[in-house]
Image (tube, rainbow over all chains, first blue to last red; front, side, top):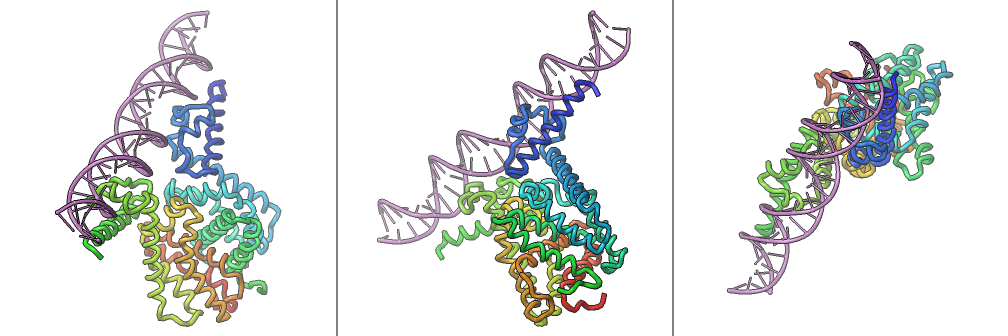
Length: 199
Length: 199
DNA sequence: TCCATTCACATACAACCTGTATCTGAGTCT
DNA sequence: AGACTCAGATACAGGTTGTATGTGAATGGA
C-alpha cells in the first residue's frame, strides 16, 4: 500500500467517522454535505470522489453501524448454547445495544426512507435479520418453538424489536422504559414456545 | 359559510388530494411543492397560506390516511364481539387494509422520518395504537391473554404489524406474500393467549 | 534522474428547492 | 358605496446537491 493510497484510505475513514456522528445527532436531512467535509477538514470534492453522493455516504455509515451492532450482539451471545435461553438472552442483548438514540435514529428511522425500504431490507437481511433467523431456526430445531416458515416470522420479530428500541431510545427515562418494555418483548417472543413457562 | 370560505375550503382539500397522491407515489423527498401546486392549478402562495409548509402538508396527509385506515378497520370489526376471535380478525383486517404500497410508504416509511419519531408516535397514539390497545385490553379483560402492561405490548404489536404490511406491500407478488406472512402474525399474536389453540 | 501519467482532492458552476416578504384583487361588512 | 379582509399570486433570498473541470503531488517506467 503506497503513501497515496494510505492517505486516501485515511480521508475515507475520516469522512465516514464525521458523517456518522452528524447523521446520528441530527438526522440525514438536517445535515448538509458541506458541514460534513468542513468538519473533516476537506471539501465536497473529496466526498464525491470517495462516494457516489450523500446517499451513498449514508449507506456506508448505516452498513457500518449494522455490522458493529450484530458483532456486538453476537459476541455477547457467544457463550449461550441452549436455544431455550438463547431467545431471551438475544432479546436482552438487542435491547442493550439498541438503546442509543443516535444509533436508533440512523438505522431504524432514517435508513428506510433514505435508502428505500427494499434496499434497507436487503441490507438488513445480510446482518440483523440473519441473526434473528439463526436464533429462531435453532429454537425450532431444538423443538422449543413450533416449526414454521422462519422468514416472515423473523421479519415480524425484527419489527417488534425495532419498535422496542425506538420506544426506549426516545423515552425521557430510557432505563425505566427499558424495564417496562423488556417484559413485553419477552412475553411476545416467549409466546412462540411450544411449552410456555408459567406466566 | 360564505362563498369565499367555500372556495378556500375547496382549494385546501384539493391541495391535500394532490399531495396525497404524489407523496404516496414517489415519497416525500422526491416531490417538490411546485409540482403539487401546479397539479392543483395553483401557486405556492396558496400552499403556504393554508399550511405552515411542506412538512405540515405532509402531516395533514398522514393524519388523513391514519384516520381512514382506522375507520376502515374498525368498521370491518364492528360485528365481532368475542375478544377471542377479535384478535385474529383484527390482524386480518389490518393486513387487508395496509397492503397498498402507496399507503404504506407514507404512513410507515416516510412519516417517522419527516415528522420525527416522537410526533409520529404521538399521532399514532391517537389512531392506530388506540385500536390495538383496545383489542388487547379487551382480550385481557376476557381472560384470553395474560394481564400485563398494555402500552408497551401494543407498541410491539404495531411494530410487527407495520413490518408485515411493508413486507406485503413491497413484495413482487403481494397476494402470495400475504399468505406467507399472515400465519406468522397470527402465531406471534396468538402466542399471547393463555390457552393457545393447538398448533 | 526525468518526464509522462495517474489520481486524490479542490474549485467553480448550474439547477433546484424551500421559506418569506410583499402585492393584488375579489369578496364581505357596515 | 367605501373601507377592510383575506385567499392566493408574485418576487426574492438563502441554501443544497450534483457535476464538470482544474491542479499539484505521488508514481512508475525509460
